[in-house]
Length: 101
Image (tube, rainbow, N blue to C red; front, top):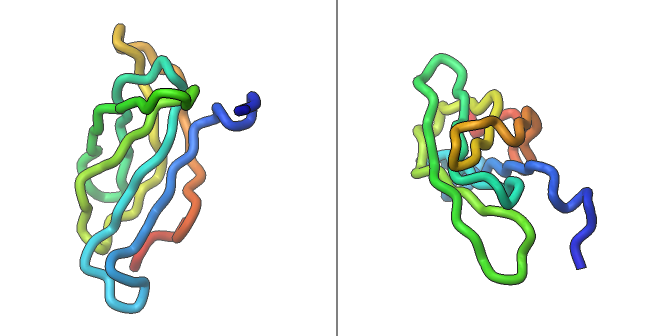
């Protein structure tokens, strides 16, 4: 069973194929069930947006951003509901929190 802490927004940075030889920055996360899209603010680059998706049995929404350049530095992510209202915001990233470069 999932508790309240499992419903907070979380984002992960993964360097592909490895931290030593980066060709892309991969970014994914979870947000509240009400979230239909997530906007990721990047340092010195335009923001990127991803639609959320759900899996039966999980009380939150998943999101994945298309691969970003190795030098991408995510700063924050904001989840919005279907009406365009902000439902969650996060600034912490698990994995390679300082980015891939």
